[in-house]
Amino acid sequence: MGHKGLQSFAGGLFLATAILGGTYYYSHHTAEESSPEMIELSTEEMMTRLTAAGYAVLTEAELEAVRDEAASATEQPEDGQEEQQIIYQMVLTISSGMTSHQVAEQLAAGQIIEEVEPFLEYLQSNGLTQSIRTGQFLLSSEMTVEEIIAVIT
Image 1 (tube, rainbow, N blue to C red):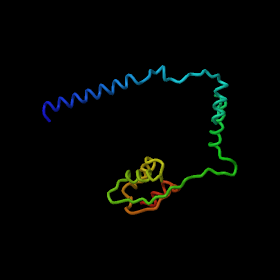
Image 2: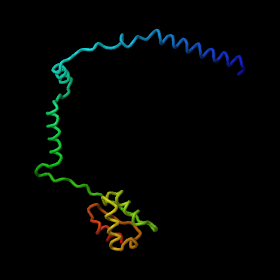
Image 3: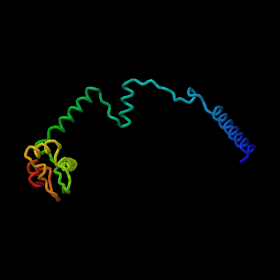
Image 4: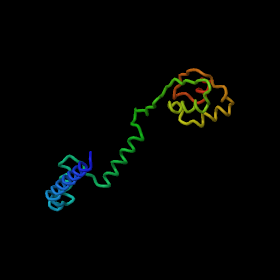
């Protein structure tokens, strides 16, 4: 594209921008003209309109009472219902060269143990860090740390 072609292209862009800007400027109304009419409602009128639309309207005290009731219902299971405990199982694969810390991290990731540190402390205090066997082991979150270590050593 030559010098004249580039000037023509730039002029066309300028002209198109000027036309679009003018159209936008002269066709839009100001915010005051297009804003909806504001109606002052009393608290009772607002509550009536919200209730009619299907919303529940509560005072602060009523809301706090509902929250307290919900919290107490979730904390205490009803008579005859026992709290359900989720039991996790996993097949732990220990390969050659894995450290006891890596094994503990896998157990924590599989939700077999809650924390890594008590597991590692038990291994170290009983001198079992070097006794971990390689292989695949079926473990459950019902098992104690001692039972898990008895299976993998």
